[in-house]
Image (cartoon, rainbow, N blue to C red; front, side, top):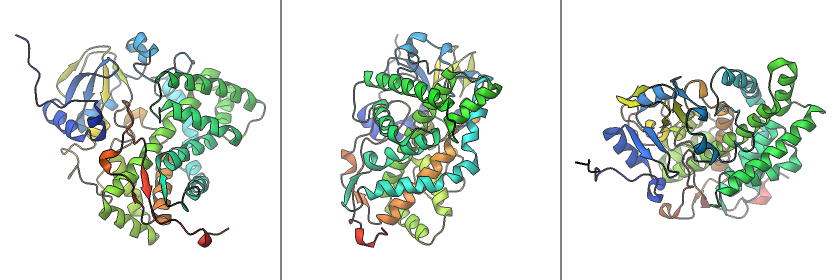
Length: 421
């Protein structure tokens, strides 16, 4: 006799789920913490929702990042991974490889994200932040996603990579297509990836003749000094740093601002702390926003290379495993008052940037941009408020990332006469 579906099991991947997935994840944590499901793409995968299981899975070497351990057809057609990356020869990046190649490439790229280099980049991030706010501060209203959260990390990562200023708006357009900001056709993602690949190949060629102090020049130097970095690897690394390095920060700023607007008591505490020149609450607050409604809902694809058990469930060879960071970071077995935003939370080993050897390499830059964005918004636009009811806001469709399509806000227009010339 066939097993009847549990009527209490929540529906996943609907628009209602996208708006607030946390009740569904709470049900899965309690009843089916390692849950096999069919994704919207048709791929069957395991969802891991408890904190302890998630932390184990993220560090388990039997879960490979390389799609070769799954279906080549699924990857080629964009059902797993980033659409178009295989056709554009952009496969050899940190999200798709395992040691020893992962170790070699991460060592090269990590030089761009040292604490010293990120700290040196802070004035530029602040300059970009103020310039973008200048564009709408006197108007009294804005869409904080399209006018602020989206362009800030694009321009920052372009500067870090060494993309000339005159080309950065092209990158902004391609990035918008890649995350389908306007709900465009999926084929547009592949086209944007191909255009970006062609541009990166040309930029690498130009920089070989005129090396600078940017990340792409650093990758070229490493290749020239025997680190065996091919042009495809250099292009793929630049591509994934842009793709993964900007969308995470877009959502950190967007989700974080939205959470503060929905929690006025916490927002007031943060504003008072910033006004006093303190940094502690801002730093713990960024970590709490990463936990509470983080930018990455599910960790990127992993594939079982040998049989393994997660949370008492056997995972067959070749099966995809998706660790649900959003569910793990609200696990009451690990976090007290898991559904409460507490910017002063200090016991907070969240998984918002992952765990293990694939921990987000750009996390220091994302944190810097998040701190600058939120502190400057709350200082320059102190009465910032939502211009639309929360139930009317739309969240972007997609499997890995979690972010708003738009965030309309209102505020008292900034007096241009009081600003320094």
